[in-house]
Image (cartoon, rainbow, N blue to C red; front, side, top):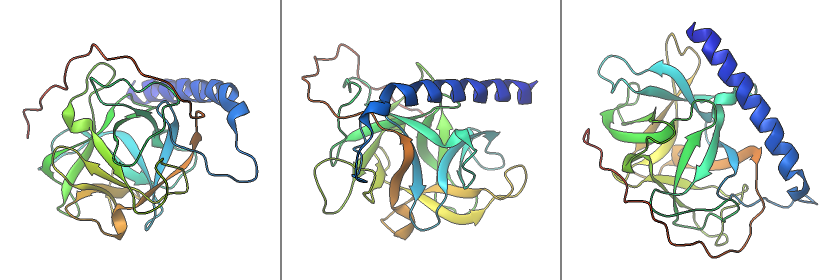
Length: 233
């Protein structure tokens, strides 16, 4: 039953992705120009050292882990669990097409599962760094889902050619694509964890995806409340 639900979920993702591609095809760049990452864009995050892409799995961390759903590094281009929608933080509206600027705080919602890229003070299984998981869902997000995008040099806006760091807003660790491989049931997939400092494993690029063209607008004041706290910290 679980496998059937997962297949149906992936079919839905394929249909949504196809519709979005048709919608934004007119925004494709000419001459190989880099595309800007904007709110609403659907992207794959690729680790620059190991080459794996961040993905959400329907397998929970066991043992001494948190019990939340695993976040792993995958290499298969057929794996639809590697796509994330770029969203703003709660309480700060980020309209579709708003460019992501250096130092901006964002959330990343997995397209296949609806869960958020998340971290908290649990030790990761392989490298004994900080655990990164996939947590919550539509309407269920907290301040441990927030990441700050930074990079050295370059322009003001995040483009898909930039090598960026994603720093966890609450604990300060950096998203890292590690080389360690999981055993069953995640055989062959690599660890995604939180590193305390910037190292070669903490640099990522926005890979293939759907990039909504940037637009200039004045966002209205948000009426949403502040992010909820997270008791497990």
